[in-house]
Image (cartoon, rainbow, N blue to C red; front, side, top):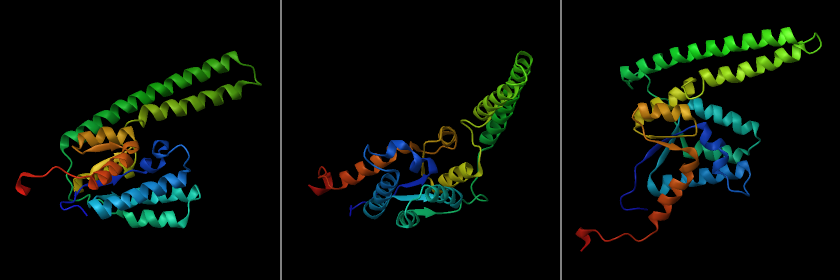
Length: 225
């Protein structure tokens, strides 16, 4: 145990556990998640580094893990080493400037969504005019598919689009914790919230470096002379 253990806190997003970047070449999905949880456990015991999740995100992650057929042992590790905590939505204050920017951005994204929709309507009309009856539906279906993808990109990519995302940021602000995610929207808003943030792919390496440094000799301090 370190004489002066670190007391860092991190709030983890689902995307950390699902990222292919945390896997070694020969690892399965379950093995990679198990190794990550073992590293989180070691960091908790040896360095006093705590990892948190809002219950909304923990439930989402557990559902995904069960769908992927992971063992109950792995789910038990998740429940043991990642602390579930509801964010205090009544006590955590958000600067008015952040709310103002969010409203402004959503207004801009609605306009972009309208332009995407208008473009899709025109494409559907053009395909209807140039196609015969046999292929008309397949052409329109293609337009609809493209519309869904473009509309999702215009309105959702890079923005807070769920209560789970907001819970994560509020909890991190409450705990003065770092945010660990691969979601570009959360990363962008974490900066506006004044929060430390770390890409999920870099988090296991960070913890491993801390743990290795614990076992290395340190330069003598002046008071030890």
